[in-house]
Image 1 (cartoon, rainbow, N blue to C red):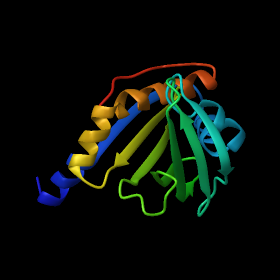
Image 2 (cartoon, helix red, strand yellow):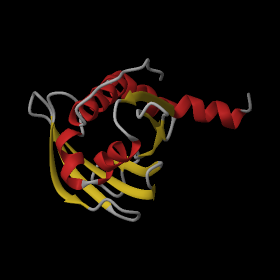
Image 3 (cartoon, one colour):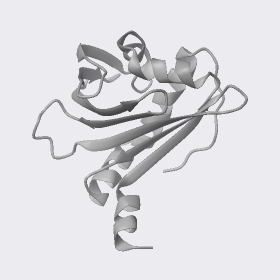
Image 4 (cartoon, rainbow, N blue to C red):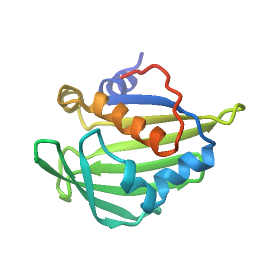
Length: 163
């Protein structure tokens, strides 16, 4: 394995889920502001949106409030949207100088049985930052979020995880 590839693997978190809904519906749940604000985020968290412009060059600003009342500001910048296959974005705190911003790629793969394989890849700035967010619960919270998406779409088919 090349050093560059090893570095990427050490900075990446990959989540995958089969959603029992057609790719167009799954993609729309990610790109329709009226839908994404209803399901996005871990169990027990609320997502209060101040701006939601989902398009290439657009931005989504929101605050997560955790079950204990802790609040986290968030900002997602949409870099690339290729319906209904791909969304690329930068995610971090609502602070332009956030050193922990990470790259997210979400792919949507239609299956012959009408289901969709959704793969979400987070690329963190350093291996240490990846470890920090995993210790914080990023993998579990990510799967909770994808579970909420599946419930939002009304049906659920789960597959194993990787990180």
